[in-house]
Amino acid sequence: KILVFIQNKAMIKRVQNSLRKLDVKCATVTSDGKKTNLTYKTLVEQSLFPNDVQVILTTSVLSDGINIKNENNNYECIVVASPTNSDMFNVDQTRQCANRFRNLYRSFMIYMQAPKKQEEHLWYIYILTKT
Image (cartoon, rainbow, N blue to C red; front, side, top):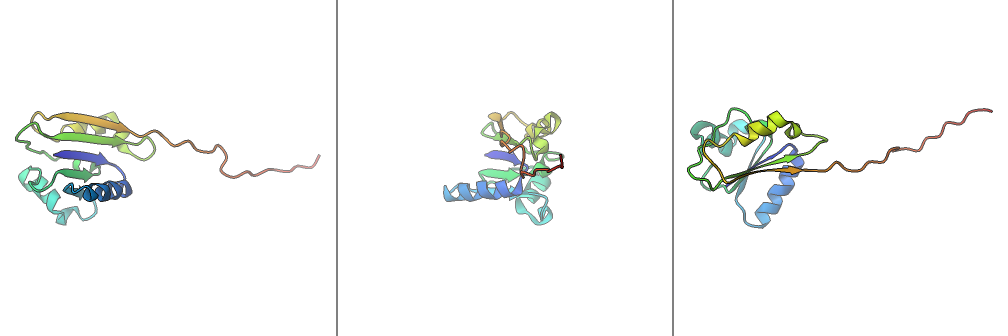
């Protein structure tokens, strides 16, 4: 069972689609509709990773106040840290994500996304002056 923190809803959708094509049972938890989300309810009310779910893809909505009672160490946590649009690049936030499981678990990984190279000048605007 894997808990993956990704602070980008579009990326969560892409990863979810890829996992489903591989027949991996995954669920997503974001702030959108979390009150009606069955995975969220199971985590909050029972402190358990749902039995029928192999991977939970989530934003930082699960990084605070959630305890997951893992019955064995066959659990993993992955944080995808993007320096451009993610609080997951913050050490304190990453520590919060790492502490969601109550018992010893197999691994904690941080996937660091490299910033994309950007053009220094997006538009080439020349200022003409009289000489």
